[in-house]
Image (cartoon, rainbow, N blue to C red; front, side, top):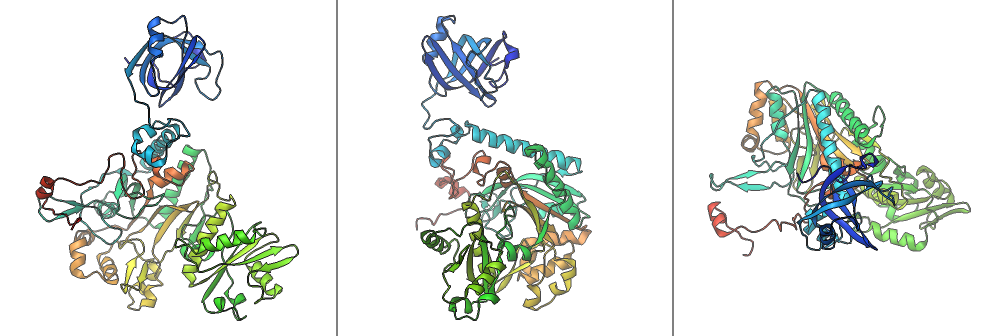
Length: 587
């Protein structure tokens, strides 16, 4: 056998035992007539000792070792003279009797250390080396633990894990599909699933009343720190449930994960907030409630005083930044330029400083100190605080203030990754109107049910009525990130057809794209609902990170490329012909 123990398990109680370890050389160093070698595997590091009592062959081999050589080491466990409290094995070392090189290694292009000297692109190219580092190892171990605990919890709740197909029909109503040409069906294509949405609903029709799957999904969309072209969902569906049943069960799952994985107890009943309240208070449907700085509308307090910027818009909002009245003019100018960036999109920024000696503002020539104080008070400002104001169309301005609020929270260190503040967002609008195409789009997806009390509005032909319809939908939000979302689904064929009508999908298109599920609803579909959690995001936040890449073994970069494989890549002409394809990329 290659090893009797791994490199992380030997302790002081093993002294005197003859053992064999196998792993990689972390480092080798010589101190006088003694050599020390740190051998590493995924379990830990153990120190090996080579001295004058070891066979000459051991000394000869040890002198030839380089970083990341794969070796097998046999010897006797002894107490370490200079102990290392940072290592679990730091009380012992192995005095070698035999040492073999199992495979030599070139010098790695970067150091395999917790803090590496390799840049992100270089480490991505050699991802298999980067994965040897402790931060990534811990991230993937956390991911494994999360998956185990999810399965354990859902199994105890009576869920069945059922696989659904990866090669499906394209239904381009959401993000762009990845498509796969079919050799056996010339000119026709499969799509890779953006989610197993229709399949899990069909499983409910089939009578499998509690389904789940930790499943790979695919979306051809622009990437961010928390988005990849292929990602993993904890996908769930239940029959004979209402919204309250779904929220309670999956709140329980998240409570279980916090407890078992992080050792953290969260509140027995999570707060719930409507989409409208979240937008009004935080300018986001995924609010970070670990800190205050709520948005306040101050429109009526600032209009009518001759300041045309405020007088010409329907909405003025403000946030009070604690302790920031000391911001200099240079800092405020920089912040003004920051909100003008395309990512924020504001045209400018107004400030009010609340100091011991009075009020100072960029617009104080238009307003009296009493008027400015009224605005500051409405925003909740205290002495020493800085009030920041933006204006424009209501929702757009609230969104801008929400982005500014998060930025100030980051600058002030208010977003502690070790603090968890989960909540549910409920009562989303069912539909979004797009002025450019002059049609409604589903805010979630076309299978989301309207709230029962809004059915009359849902069947109205008036645009104003349809804009008031709320979805029977919900999102689980943690620390400013949407970790999961779902809804009670439409389960009646006529209601589903009405949804297609509202979305401007013709009867013919609906039959072509979704006929299978419309027909299934005619055969006794039960009331059902569910949700999906972004598993990569859950793992990242539980690991105290905002980016998901470290929690995926082989991620893509920010333009969707795998730089290790150099993918995507061209295929040869023979493959193109076999698939009846022609490229126009260079035409």
